[in-house]
Length: 158
Image 1 (cartoon, rainbow, N blue to C red):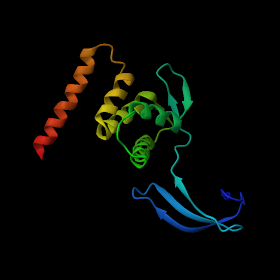
Image 2 (image 1 turned 30 degrees about the horizontal axis):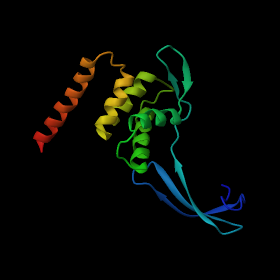
Image 3 (image 1 turned 180 degrees about the vertical axis):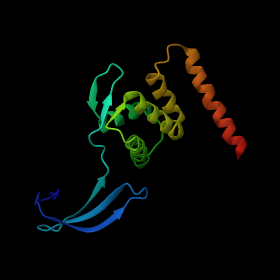
Image 4 (image 1 turned 120 degrees about the horizontal axis):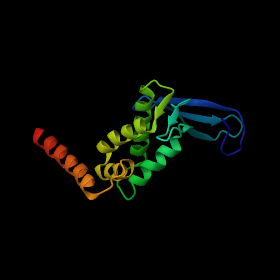
């Protein structure tokens, strides 16, 4: 790890802490040369996973693509960077749990929608309207009614 100040290649780890979800490690480092202290985050990475598109094309999994798609649905919605990072992480864990080297874009989309539904219902509707390609208002209304029904059920349980 290079020092961000002097670019020296030798740093030492001063402290390591596992994140709350246990899926990343935050390390406090110190440069051997200039003694500048900085933090790094070591996270799980999905490696060697290929996403099979609906037209049969195959491409390597891209965290950036996943984040971009979800960020579009979250436009002007209230959330913190930490909540967003946790959402992405949870989605990636579910993809990893499939224990397959190839997953379909449909499987990824369904995982994203399941988590977005719990995270932010407006973002979920936005994502679903593009992902499921609602062709008319009635399909859109059906999805909204489904959310309203779930919300009523959860309130009546309390």
